[in-house]
Length: 312
Image 1 (cartoon, one colour):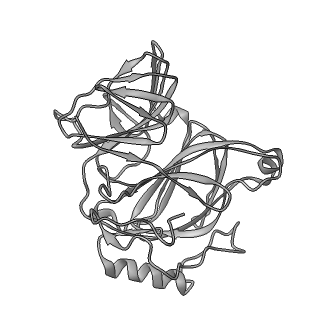
Image 2 (cartoon, rainbow, N blue to C red):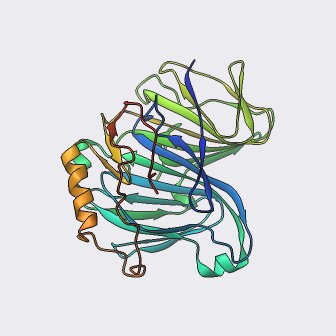
């Protein structure tokens, strides 16, 4: 029933910890999901640095930011300035190239408070790798929800359980947020049938759950076998992200770039280093320089750890 269990690796991104789940040395992707971080949970004191990610570039992917607590201000070189709050989605498609920053608003920083959320990268299919960049902010009304008997479920992106979310995905996938009361039982979308997705995983963001006869805790991803039809039981109050989709093929990932060829990665590196990618108009006084050493320049599923410079 269970193909692999991945423990999130805690990483300090300059005073703020994330749990890095994907890519993993023996499992680079789940469907088109090529990167997954759990941001926090953290509690920032008034005036303390919170999220402060300077402008940086992406190609070949869509980023999906989703929060349980807190707020992040997004700015990009398409002209969008958009705060994201719990239950909302920032869906940014890089395509042939985009630059953005993610920061805590100064007023929010002065007050302090919690921060907890997820950031996923979705690799674009080959035919969409060079599309024009775009940004979409989706409110809670754009994401179907279900609530009954101690289960709350929100379809964050894609299609599942006969519903479709508003995010403009480029390939078959699903991404679901569960909130489970202790003792509640439920099941992930099927891997079979016309709507089944061939790759699926569960990520425990809070609490503990039981899958089959095994117990899993916060910070663990459970990659399911393709034909598995498990029942999931909450042992405590639990937050679980359920994801999956169809593979889009082998990909290279280096720093914040995803591509199907080394030549495209090299071009992106040269473009950023030469200043050919514009900065956001409202956040153009600084940026993250191109790393001097490669971080993830290996094709999936080759084993590699994200060192010495991680994606941001």
